[in-house]
Amino acid sequence: AQSVSQHNHHVILSEAASLELGCNYSYGGTVNLFWYVQYPGQHLQLLLKYFSGDPLVKGIKGFEAEFIKSKFSFNLRKPSVQWSDTAEYFCAVKKQTAGNKLTFGGGTRVLVKP
Amino acid sequence: DAGVTQSPTHLIKTRGQQVTLRCSPKSGHDTVSWYQQALGQGPQFIFQYYEEEERQRGNFPDRFSGHQFPNYSSELNVNALLLGDSALYLCASSLTDRVTGELFFGEGSRLTVL
Image 1 (tube, helix red, strand yellow):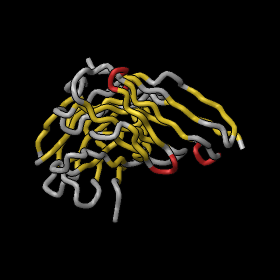
Image 2: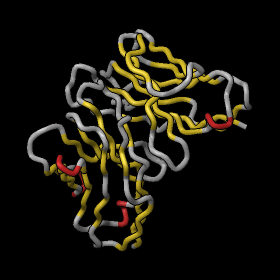
Image 3: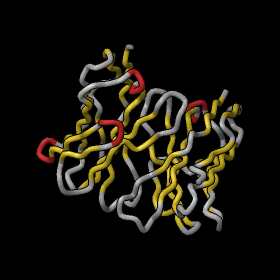
């Protein structure tokens, strides 16, 4: 069965620090990849997505992610975080043939200290 | 432009009871998916509705059923509730004929089973 692993459950860092969240998936076929963010008390929102083309994807709020096919990874990065980046981050994978069914990782809670 | 709306936001039920959760998709969207998010975990796909039919189903028992109406809104029904059904239930909508498959999520219905 397809699975998505997020390596860190909790991350605590200070403002202006760099952030990298790991995501690995197990499916070997063609996939679409997503990062969603859930701010406290809000709904899941799309940060960025990869479908094809340039493996370095830029999203909203200064986030980017790199798809490395050989490593089945799609890591999320931000060079300098702000207190407002405190949230839970979810990696999700969709098989290209799977309609709109997303398989989510377990999430990473990020706390940015002011 | 209204996003995805869900009701109720919170509810408490006892074991063995039945519950119905409701979802109105984002304006213009014709596909609705339901996800279960247990505490501390990522969302898990329950099923997806398009053209008033269940198109895909995740690994959930038959106690979980749904319906989509002609106006694209949807209901999730859970029968014979178990303690383990306590979770946040998320509705997501999308436009089926778009290849990007981006999902827009509602804020969820938090179900507590006592």
